[in-house]
Image (cartoon, rainbow, N blue to C red; front, side, top):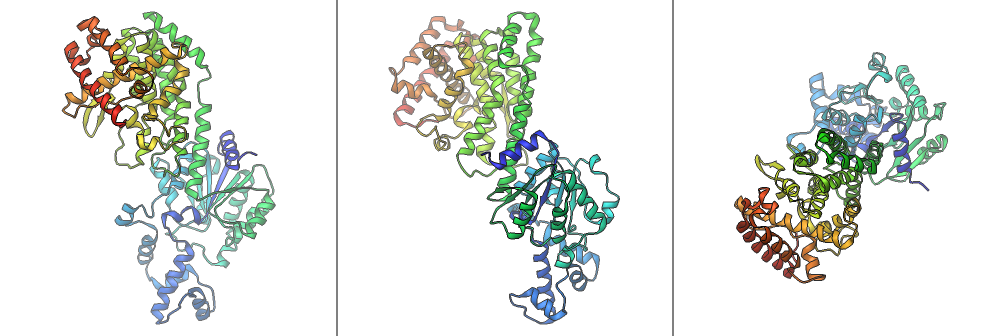
Length: 589
């Protein structure tokens, strides 16, 4: 049976904007926003103190006994705060964060609000119904550059832009916190003004409905509206954290709604967003197959007259990948709840990168020097820029570099396979990266241990036993794009290892030149040398090749190692010692 969340994601993707959201207090709970009833009880407590009474734990009952009516939010505000300024100041304290609360992440948009905002930005929601008084969703929308139409009372409903002409309409059924007419009591929640009812009936008739954070218990008028909606054009989904009440069961059964069990609203909306945007990424791929793009690339590198056609082909695919790597699709502030999440995100990166991996593998295999700038430009484009004034989880921040790392490996291994060292040198040296106001070679940032921490990688299912887990994973997933050029398994392994070895040498050279400790990443070859063949086998092969050509070796003539065979051999000697020490100690990075 299909998971209801997956079913919902497919429905949303295939029928963009057809679902409305109904959000209750559970969506804002993790932001520590008080409910209207909690504020009402706080007001009653203040009133009791003024009266010199101690209401104890039965605050609401104290008010009812004393005033012979249930607590009324608006009346209490007027009794305790005589001016509008005083009332507004009190309400701002309840709903707007102080500087200290901002630092602690309190009373700001939650992951759920941001995920919803990203889906709205992509056009997946056009109408939001909410019983909440806060403005967290509005703030999340402002952060992504969207100004919503907000309806919080009958007057605003009368003059509102028609739903069809509004990018997003938020209907605050119980009011807004700065409007003292918000609804809290049972009698207030039992009916809506005519204009609100008419708007609500239209929405429930014309849209499907996704409910989250709403119990269905207290909002009698809203419950009645859902039950009286005549049509069942689109499905209803009810996301529920705890056990569903009998009242909710009644609505679910009446509307034949699908239930989705969730741990909380943040996880639900983030998962929903990821699934929908993954479907969008898949469907946005170019209709031209990988095979056709490979043949086009072969043709365009064959003659100089096709240079600009090659550029346009590569950059079209690069831009398509760039668009699919947005933060909306791969949020950096997502909490890590299981290591499977890392594996899943890596799989998504691999999936959307497959076209460009094949294009660069082909191009770098057949190209000449005049094409190198195109491959460099492609990798530069998909390399993430430094994050400014925003925080994120380290694993997600680092993993943003994974597509660029895959493309570098694909082009680099292909270049090594045909000893196209001029192209290899461009890939390893021509791409710069700015971080902290300092410009340096991207290679110093773009290597497996930096993209995915080894200790963390070893906790991912399928990568537990490898000394250099991401290198071995790259070895596996790049096999298919490179198979047409390296059909033999031994040749593929040797080309892969030689690329990582040369990359490690260049890395170590750059680090030493900028005054850092001599070090370079050790890849699969370091482990395989110990397990499969004599230590130094790959090192000896490279040394023989370098000494055979001397300063005329293309790798040096392309500008690496100061174009000096002596410099190369010095770096190689130190790096080989580092590799041997790493193998013996078992400390791979």
